[in-house]
Length: 246
Image 1 (cartoon, rainbow, N blue to C red):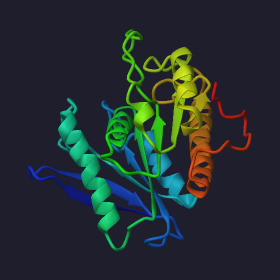
Image 2: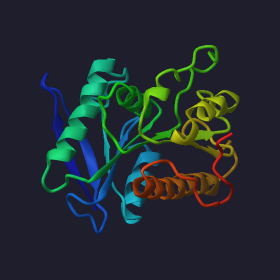
Image 3: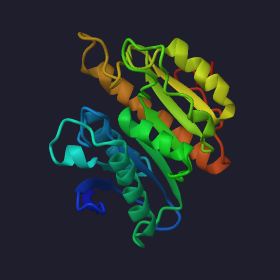
Image 4: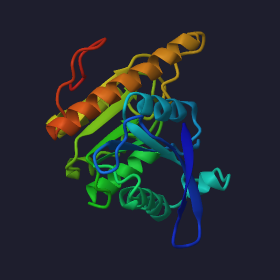
């Protein structure tokens, strides 16, 4: 079961999140995933709803949240300072709530939500035990000459990148070298046939998206468990193919 949490910024903007607690969650000792949405969607995107619910069923509590612009029904994303303020507010409120106060926090995001988290982590503004990127926007479609990777090497936490083979925001021939440069800090998981939202090609059928979502979930859970226990991104056990660190 999920419950709604309200967040307030200093400029009187408010936004909300939906929290799904694992059955065995215990304040101060259990991990939690914080999950932000992409630029053109909200926390109710089908992928985020699925991940939040199923992570909790897998024993990992999850809080998905809106940014202020999506909460207000606006289509244009907030300016970077507001996006960062929202991330800080969510993290601070979760960590200081005595009924939550997770021992470990994983900052995760779809596209924009993950990119902002990565920039904050690189600047020391978002202390998290790990970061997960569901469709990292390495470049704009058609602009492969301008990459958003320079800050990633400054991140001290382990990172898990998911990328679809049809993602126009993430050319795998460019993403693989980025992950190689990051070394053991980065793990790259490739979703065959997935686009920027990990949807399959037209005509593939609903079961194809279900399989993609399930793989995202299973690999996320395995990586979080290995990362939290080992303190760094450890190789994952094979499951439909080994982690792609090429």
